[in-house]
Image (cartoon, rainbow, N blue to C red; front, side, top):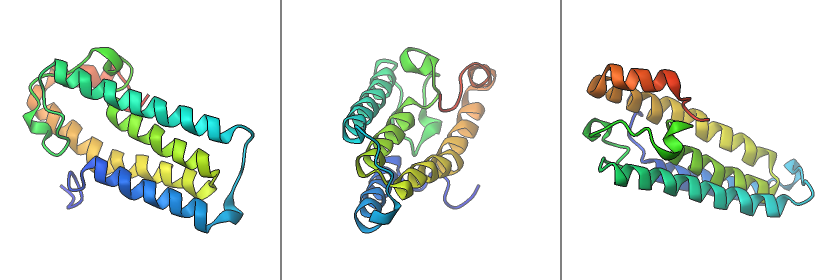
Length: 153
């Protein structure tokens, strides 16, 4: 296990990347690609991201399993309902959509690159370790779910 696996809570990671995206849009104005309607698109992405993340949390609450991403071994069930039929990680997908909305608001190429970096980091140091823990906990049931539903979308 790498020392960064399951170390930084995803909400802290979102805050760090959000700050970096906002900073990039303010301090790197030459790296902007404004698209007509980018602010409206940004608001839609942020609202959609919040909705997707909240739907993921509510599905976990209804299933009475942990929403603590730092302790996947405490999961009590494999959730396959709601958005979990389309994505194994709707909470993280929602976070990425919020960050994408922030990048769209600032029309920053650097911001878009930071969204990709967030997804890469989260996949490597959060999602893959969670998947290993869930495979160990639920075995074939989770392996079957992994074969049926994509990691992101």
